[in-house]
Image (tube, rainbow, N blue to C red):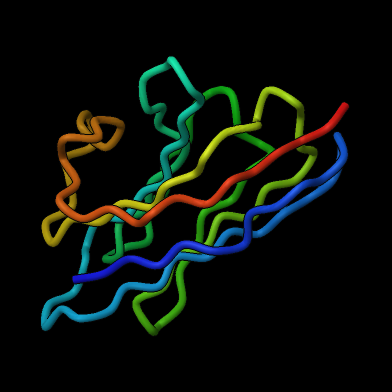
Length: 125
């Protein structure tokens, strides 16, 4: 199974970016998908998650109202990021799990078995 994340880049504060994550190589559906981010010297931080069945979504408090996680019908997940702030600067990773984590665990990176390579998002002030 491979996750390919793309869409990162450099944007000014207040701008928008859309990240994409395509899942390939597996014969089973990834029922739990998430986005995390990490800056040097800090732990990986939960950003957003989505359950494939039912399309329930979850967000960290820091991005709620600004970011939107969504999916299509082709095993791909997106993260629309609006009103970006310099504090959003990080490497963003998509993650996937064949079994969606329970609600209380969606923010735990250890619940996700597969990870993409990361895409850099830089927000200038």
